[in-house]
Amino acid sequence: MIDPRAKARRLAARLPEAERPTTLRDPRRLGFFTFYFKRYFKKHMNALWIPPWGVPGFAGEAAPLVLYTNHPAWWDAATYILAGDTFFPDRQSYAPIDAEMLQAYGFMKRIGAYGIDLESPKGAADFLAASADILTRDDAAIWLAAQGRFMDVRTRPIGLRPGVARLAEIAPHALFVPLAMEYQFWEQRGAEAFLAFGEPERGADLLALDREARRTHLEERLTGVLDRLSADVATRDPARFETVLSGAAGVGGVYGAWKRALAAMKGERYEAAHGRRPHPGDDRP
Image (cartoon, rainbow, N blue to C red):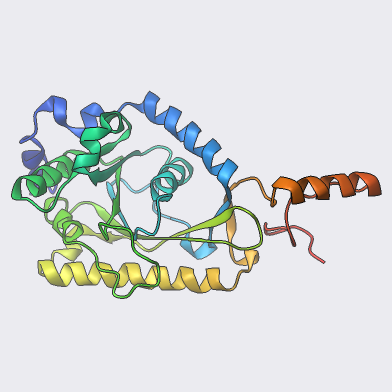
C-alpha cells in the first residue's frame, strides 16, 4: 500500500533540518503571543463570534488540516491564533506569510510563520517544501490566506491563488477546510469579528480534478461559506451566533464617563455596552 505521506516527506527533505517550520516553531513563544493577542483583541474589539453551523466538528481527525481562508483585514493573523487556540488546542498551527516580511521579522518563524513567494520558481518551491514538512504531521494545521492579498468580503469572484490547489498534490491525506472571516461594526465602539468553518474535503478527492478546476472548486466552496456567514452578519442579530471571545463593550471616552456618572447618581448598575447587550442570552427590552 502506498503511503500518502511519502511524497510530502520526500519534498520536505529538500529543506535543511534547521530551516524546517516544524523545527523552528517554539511552543513557548507561541504561547506568549497567544496570550498577547488575546489581551489585545479584548482591548480593541467587541467580540469574536461564530454561527452554530460554522463550528468545526473535525478537530479530532487524525489528519493534517489546510484551512484556506479569505483575507479581509489586518486582524486575520490574530483571528488565526485565537481560533487555533480555541478550536484546535492540540494541533500545531502554521501560517505562510510574505517572504520579505518574514526576513524583516525573523522572530515570526518561532511562532509558526513560514515564507511564501509565489512570484518566483524558487519561492514557490520553498513554499511547497515548507508546507510538505508541516503536512507530514497529523496534528498540524496550515492557516492559509488563499486570496494572497487584502480583499473586501463582497468582492466576487474571490480570486484564490493557485498555491492552495497545489497542496492537495503533496498531501492527499490532508483535510481541506474553507474558513470564512468578516469584520463589521454593530452597536459598540469596537468591531465585531466573525468566522465560520465549512465542511472538510480529503485531498485525495480533490485530485480527481485538474489543477485549475481544483482551484475553482475550492474557490466556490469558500465563497459559499462566506456568503452564508455574510447573510447572518447582515441581520445584526447576536442570537445567530455563539461567542468565542468577548472584548470590552462600550463607547468609552467622555460619553462612557458620563454614562458611568449618571448610573451612579441614579443608583443603577453601570452598563458599558451601548444600546442592547451584544451577547446571546442577555436580557433585552
